[in-house]
Image (cartoon, rainbow, N blue to C red; front, side, top):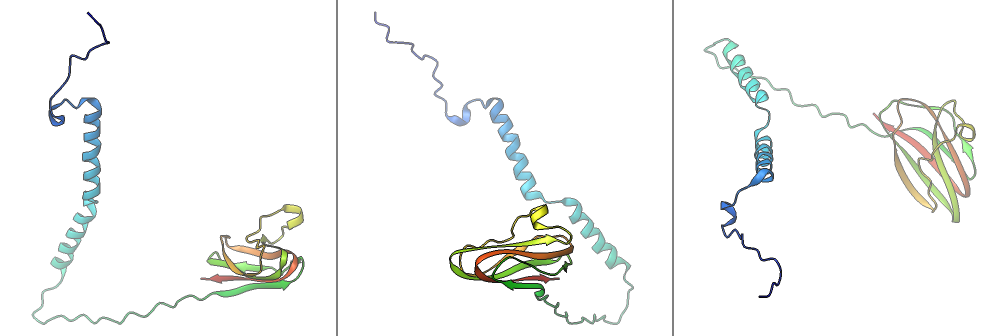
Length: 179
């Protein structure tokens, strides 16, 4: 008698849908039902509130035999905010600019650099009263090639100034804000 190894004698030949689920199957089913319910349901409280508000407003309106006409005013187009330059600076070496104020609106730095292959320029937006060489800082842009560019400024409302460290290039910078 040869013993080639353990033999499996308990083979379950039932189709997959007739086999027992176990704990993992039950938990998976509950999660699936919860996901379907939350995806399709929405917030029923808002729907009920809207329906009751509609019923209340129609039941409170005075009854009149005369037809009512609602005079609708044409929508006035919203004024599109434009970018306004709040500070500008240009040069060909290190330079600091005058203080300017940001209102906490959208702000950006637009810059242009013209130099050779060893161009090095770093644009800093510093808080008023702080000094780059004493307090340190991170440049908001530091292009290494000639060209124009822009970057978003994420500064809070306050007073700032431009500080530029530049070598082997002429550069210009504008801080712009759109409120």
